[in-house]
Image 1 (cartoon, one colour):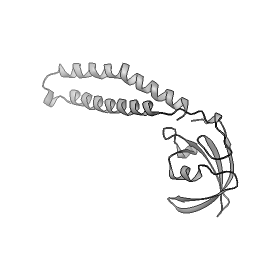
Image 2 (cartoon, one colour):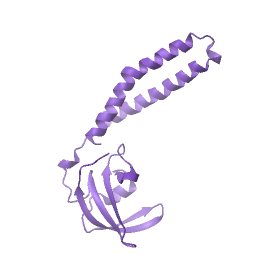
Image 3 (tube, rainbow, N blue to C red):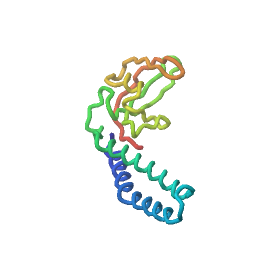
Image 4 (cartoon, rainbow, N blue to C red):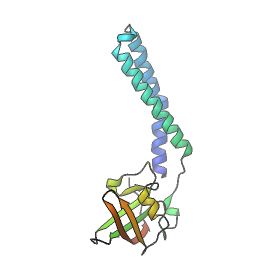
Length: 156
């Protein structure tokens, strides 16, 4: 993943652990004082929120702990790799599309950011300018020519 993503996830994890846990515990204590816990909607809502938050903390702890932070500007981009900007030309209609290969946490297909683990990225990895690739899309099989492979600063 990119350093900016690692920093964002680490900050979220720290916020959840140091601030949000305390807030939820306080809400649960206040709700507990309202009486019968069986019919205490505030208490049950707070416990549900606490459960979701603890699950997010576990997910983030795992993600941050296993993260490999990569600076794609230091990688060679003669061949498609992490952080590469790839311009493809559809052989059928000559339309052009551009993708940037990023980590799963940065992925946003609407912005052209595709996960390095996606089927499309796996087909593109290691290819170079001028290569032909066949990609299976939801709309069917398409053949593209790789117009260019480069590195451009990634804006999330």
